[in-house]
Picture (cartoon, helix red, strand yellow):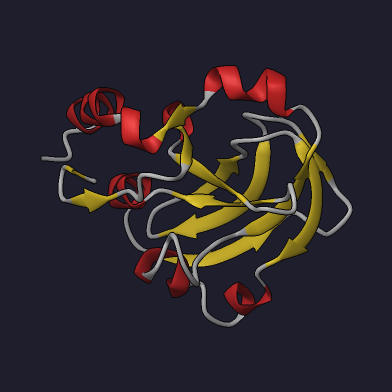
Length: 142
C-alpha cells in the first residue's frame, strides 16, 4: 500500500494517531516500529533508544526515544506488553529505522498483554488508507 509516497505492508496493524505499527508473529509475540509515513513527517533520525528488555509498556505510551534533526521525540507503542527484545543494531545504525522501517529498522519485540483491548485502537494496514491519507493531509505530506 502507498500513501503520500510512503509504503505500508498490508499485514501490519497500525496505531494511526502515533504512526507506529505492530506485526504479530506465529508465536504470539509482536514486532513493533515506526511507519514510513510517520518517519516522513518527522524527518531524519539520528538516534534511537528503545525501552529496555523486561519493561512493561502501555498502548499509546513511550516505547522509545528518538532524536531528530530539530527535536527529541517519544515514540508511542501500538500495543501494551512486556519488552522481550530490542533491535540492538539501532545503537550503532539508527538510520536503519528510516531506511527499512518494516524490516531491519524495527524497534522492539513485545509479548502483548492486552491484545483484545488494544486491538480496538488499531487499524489493519489493508483497511487504513482513509485514515493514513487523512494523517498525511493533516501533516501536509503530499
